[in-house]
Image (spheres, rainbow over the protein chains, first blue to last red):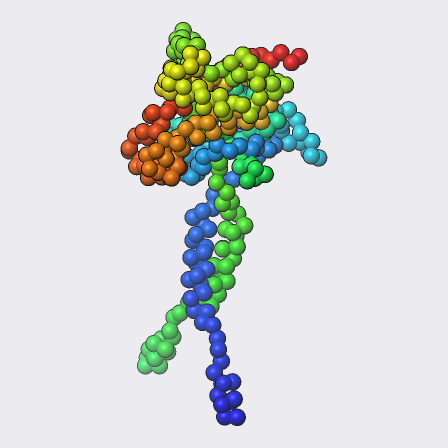
Length: 150
Length: 188
């Protein structure tokens, strides 16, 4: 009986003193990995599937160019347009200046082309021509791994 | 005076830390929600530099050029013969690894060029499939080369390659993919 009372006295508790530290560690991890400035994509980009993929590990080198049918209200899609940063491109010849300026800021720039799989090659070729004029030659055709083949 | 001094000493100024975890939790949840961890993957390549109008593109001998043509209907023309996307990989492999044996294929890996031409109306999806096959052929060649050098595969070789060191495998088997200006499109 005496043994019983002894047990009830000792309250087993997990020490929460280090809890803030653990949480802070997690917090710092997520702070470091977060990319806050996600642009709102105004065009639909369903990426194609591919096998010969390379990863772009350094996100800071990457600049995105979106191409695809522009999103309209009510799940409808308009004509195929090009979007860089936050804006849709009206005049294709502007791309060379935009890209040249990005290249000056980041000499190791990689342009990731996120093109909708149903787009025609015409617009892609036009953009590539502009990229060549801007001097941004390192590109990546953004595509997803085909899971069904694994 | 004595009373005041005593009072001041007793006051142990401390910031309450019990809510620290809660604050940290709130921040953590915020970053958890906003984080996107997915890495961008894609088929990487380098575009040729912009040529002046007067400057002629460097001449390539007919036999060193493997022409792939994809029209708007998704039909593939490999070296002027009707073919399919599935055949591209083996064709690229024989073309690049020919080393001058077959007169229809390339003289040496250094001179071998794969040229991809599309219509303006060709779906992007098809272009990527073609691109994928061509690059998979090159990856296969690089993997074989890396294995003969004692590495597990090409990725393993790349991982152990220092930044400054030259990539010997790619020097030996350079991937020369040329993108031809598309035809205006004959579908309409």
